[in-house]
Image (tube, rainbow, N blue to C red):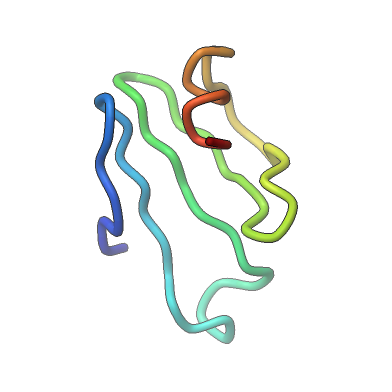
Length: 59
């Protein structure tokens, strides 16, 4: 899964082909935390990410 962005220590990874991986979403990795976000609504679908990390991802 390629890294598409890196900021404030958060890595954003994403598959580009929908047929490979279901609904459009991206993975946010922040230290030992890992979360999956819906690409359209920016809602966290699964995982754990501190509130600070969630706010940074949604900006």
